[in-house]
Image: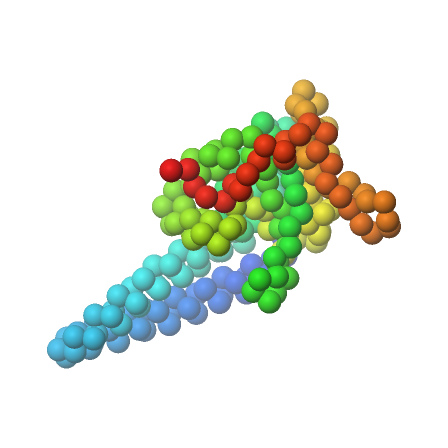
Length: 214
C-alpha cells in the first residue's frame, strides 16, 4: 500500500521555533551577564552563568529540533509501521509489531487542553531503547510525572485523538493482516461517544509504562 502522510500545521511549529529561539537568546544574555559578574569577582555570578548555560543548551536543542520538524510531516504511515515526528520527544519510527494499542488521551493538568494518542507497546522497554541523549532525559522527566514515552501529539494536526487512534488501528489492520488487531477506540452506544475495544487482551496485563527500565 502507498504510504499515508499526515501533515502538521506549519504556523504552530514556526511559532514554537521562534519562541524557543527567543528563549535561547535570553539565556545567552543571562550567560553573558554571569561571565561579567564572575570576572568582576562576584561569587554569585557562577549561579547566573550556569543557569544561562543550561538554559541556552536546553532551549537551543528545542529550537533546532522544532526547526527540523518544520520540514517534516507529523506522521508517515506505511507497511512497516509509523514514523512519528509530531512532538519534540517523538520516538521516530515505530514498527507495527511493537504498537499493539492506540489510546486517545487528554491532559488538562497544565490548564490547557493537550490531546495525544498513547501507544501500547508489546515490549514496554522497547521505546526506552530508542531514546538517547537529551531526548532520553526529557522523557525521563515526563515519566516522573506519569507520562509514558511514545505519545503521538495531535495539537498540530487536523484530527482529534480519537480520530487518529482509530485511523492507526485501522491502518495496522489493513497493512498487517497477519498481526492480531490492536486495541483502540470504537464508537460507543451513544452518538458522539467512544469506548476502547481490546479483542486480543493487550491491555489486561499492562501496568504503568511510564517508568524507564531499571
